[in-house]
Every structure is written in structure tokens, then in C-alpha cells.
Image (cartoon, rainbow, N blue to C red):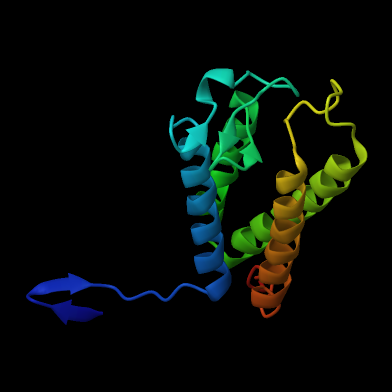
Length: 154
């Protein structure tokens, strides 16, 4: 325990994978919120609940809808999952896999089709590819030294 200015605090260092998951979760929360802010999201009046008809663009570049923004908010789950190194690693790798699948999906689907329900444009595809690579690199790279804890022998 360390004493600072008369108060007692405990010092607990977080594993780098936990810090990464907390930051990633916070960024996703921020992006999800910003997707609902007119001005930061251009063509805000054209935002649809879902589907290719949504004309709203986050930062004037990335196609968004209400559903798309809610998904970003849900990725904020990285913050509570970062309570443990194992949870943080699972969040980063799982999110990376989701974004890898979303990347393939985005490159294969027709833009004006009903199957483009998130909706996804070309800028989203390249961002999703970068996110997939980055999240997987963080999860596998920073999480490589995490060992599963085993119950004590009886």
C-alpha cells in the first residue's frame, strides 16, 4: 500500500491487454455517441433505423444508421471485460474476428441491397479491415503471456 497526502491507496498495475481493451471499448462508446450528434454526423436528417437507405455519414465519410451506432455502443463492453486480462484478450480477439467477418461481408454485398442492413460503404470496409487487423494484433500480441489461472490443488 502506498500513502499519498494522508490517504491510503492500493496500487494495482493493469496488464497491457487490459489497458488496450479499456481504450478500445471507450473509443467505440465515443464513436457510437458521436454517430448521434448532428454536425459530426453529416446528413443527420437522412439517418435511417437501418438499411442501405441511410444517408448519414459519421465525419462525412462513414455510413451510419441507428443500428450501426448502437452496435458501436455495444462494443463498449470492452470496458467491463477489461477487468481481467483474460476477458480483455477475449474481447480484443473476438472483436477482431467480428470485424474480419464484417470486412468480408462488406466487400461482397451490393451497396443498394437489403442485405446491406448495417449500412456499410467503401470507407467502412477499409476501416473494418484496419480494425480487424489492429484488434487481432492487440489481442494476440499483448495477450500472449496470459496464463489461465487454475484452482488450487486440494
